Image 1: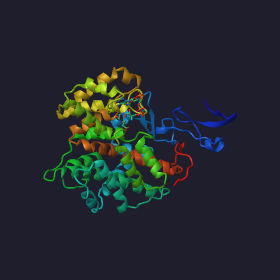
Image 2: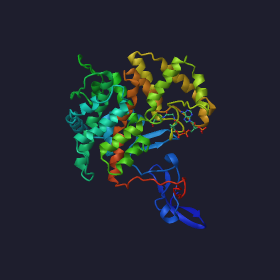
Image 3: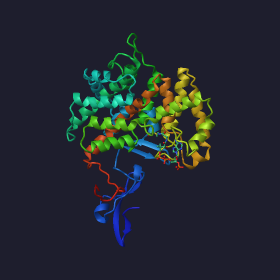
Image 4: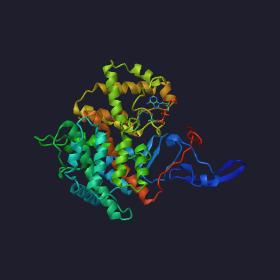
Length: 423
Ligand code: CMC
């Protein structure tokens, strides 16, 4: 299927080219639609709209396939480190051993932030949501680092990207330490990226910190699974903010705010809160299934359904298995895991969920693992942000290198027509 597609409007015929992706996906190139016909398209939520052509992530929602730069998510989660995946997403290839060594060493070099950032953190009340704090601290980074990057300079781009990869985990860890009342600390250069995330989050001031390999392995997997997901809400936000030529850090800060919402990254927090509420209410999962199906009840089964996956979410499969392993290995019995499994079992055989193709998504089990690691519920979305950082950077870089035009959708106006003040 190559060629053009015909549109007939007011007895005139127009042709628009078909665009083919490398996985045989087709789209209609409507760049000339308005110029030729005077029409625009209307697609709230962009359910049918491709905002860009991208080489980074492929997903097939029907078949449950997710690939970063051609590598299956299962392969990456099993056989790669998060920082290798970050490099792959951003620069397109798996790093050689030497590139990886240099990258890790550069990240270690940049693993500090300006001490004045501490005063920004200090100004937040302890009760502030960590996602709001993280977005602000990320914006704060702009004040202490070059605010703009010459996107045509490979070196400047590389420097800015490494800087962010190095400093962002510190901000994430500090939002946690603030909530916990722990003194702010820095990375330990003898540890790798993920070990340092754990070290910076969990190290107590009076004790040495020895990373638990079970926790490190699970964290590595979780962050890889979250690392990119093509044009989701926060990534589209990063690309659209970046399209105004706002800087990298400003674009990422906007992405963090988009991720915060419970329909997106905030779902992992919402899932645990939902499971807890069900537990407190006696663990009657059937009652909550009915609530989820009742159109007069705003309750939704959090962690279920996905805009793109209409068969299964491959990340959810990996995470479910990891949740079982982590809880077993750490010897934790968490009643909410049983409630989650009950809900999943009932939903998978319920016509409402089957007809609407609603399956557990990545967030259904991730919170259970985070909890087992001792991460508080309000921090879950921060962990998602940490995982998604390489994807946001990769998408921002791709958009700038393609020199995409500023993102500026149109609308169909439905308000009052011209009127005058009548006094
Ligand atoms: N519980 C109950 N009903 C649901 C649910 C749910 N979790 N999700 C969708 N539906 C129903 C919805 O009411 C609608 O029914 P009907 O056709 O009768 O009106 C139908 O399924 C289609 O739903 P939709 O809201 O039109 O689908 P969408 O593609 O706009 O939304 C979604 C996708 C993820 C926002 C939605 O499924 C949802 O709200 N899920 C719960 C929140 C959640 O887990 N979000 C995390 C997404 S994965 C992490 C990430 O990538 O951010």
